[in-house]
Image (tube, rainbow, N blue to C red; front, side, top):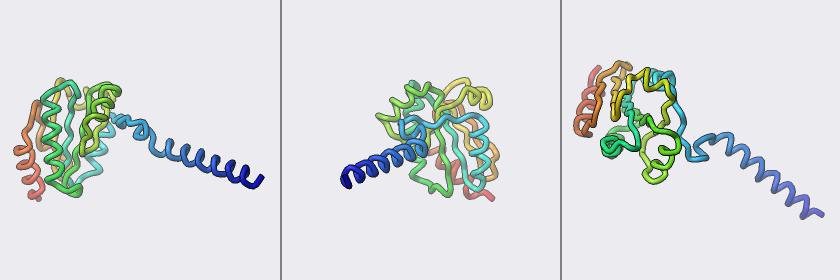
Length: 162
């Protein structure tokens, strides 16, 4: 009788923990990247004043984008989290993005773009990289592949600027 009550309490505790974890983790527990809309991106830039913010719009089917991810991971390692924020904004559908990230983890946050992102940030092709200075002002808007050497130089100069 006591053992049955203990098993019942233990099952209830496990069930409650599982429920709390699933609501806390949300889409991350399912391996899905968070969706992000244009306002969220603008808020991210605004909230990170004092840091350089690099936003990279990309797609899993784009070979230049996939190469650029390697470069961006190198850039991520070169600067601290206090100096630089990097966000990848995927223009793909959720299932393609999820499959890609399962095979190739990335060292910076990746988000799945909501439809308004394409219009708000004038995304007519990928990759597109936008870098914002420490005051939140656009310092670079570049369509096409940007080598890590160029990004490192720009980020260093923005960090040194007052």
